Image 1 (cartoon, protein in one colour):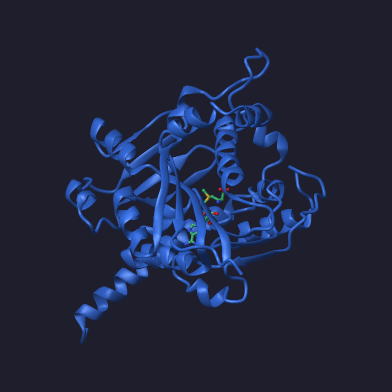
Image 2 (image 1 turned 180 degrees about the vertical axis):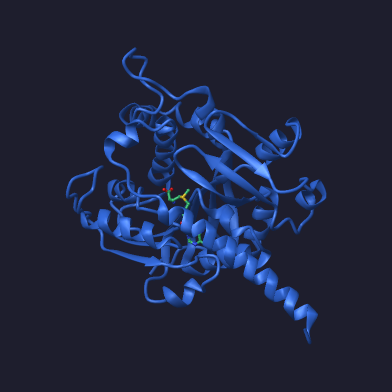
Length: 327
Ligand code: SAM
């Protein structure tokens, strides 16, 4: 009461924390599925396609012996991909304690439906924490520098405030070695905004997803250099149901440059699939994962509605400036 401005700041800060908790609780509550449940999912082919996209990114940029930081690692669904890349060390962090527990179980090879008692060839450290709030350079001072940082389908949870978006990039930049690589996937704001404009009202979607904006979407805010906190609710059948934030990629790129990153590429996931499906080794990987079927009538394939969800995302690669230490 004595300090109304202070109260306002307090409220803003509190609501940011409440939303971060909502996201964490949502993911924590998602239990591990059995193989049968997974195969019966209405978005099983989309999940396989997303796994293919992440595998391609990892195969393109991870090298034998690399130290890897997996921000928002979830249940450790990418552990096998990193193992195939023969990395030397892995640190995974996620805000959802339930997911980190599942990740630990998977790493230890216990009661896992996807792979029985697989032992990973790299040592790992798994932590529960808010990657967009905590100063990870302090927490991980003894683990750094990393050769590769990965943030899959999660960077947009940092865009609720400018402070969090900056903390996210500052963390990655401080922990990567010069010349280190930052790979990720996140919603493609241009596609989401285009769909919003085409829709009547605040919501749009199809049989497997919907997006609903809280209020009239602000073009002005989207185009400004200060486009944080543009919130919408995202529902993806059998996967996601929580608040998310728009990340205009041009602002993300400009901000990343402030933290010593240069853009290697950004591609919408449709373009990404088209491009890397021209390479035989990745076609073979797609066949093994079964995302697009193999023309065999027995094997089902991605539905048009799942393919539309793939269009909502992009993949990016950033490189930390500087030359790797030659010593
Ligand atoms: N990267 C994993 C993958 O590709 O399978 C998980 C992706 S899932 C769509 C998003 C993840 O981001 C969830 O595990 C969630 O708990 C995590 N997350 C959201 N906000 C976070 C934060 N502030 N700090 C750390 N993790 C966060």
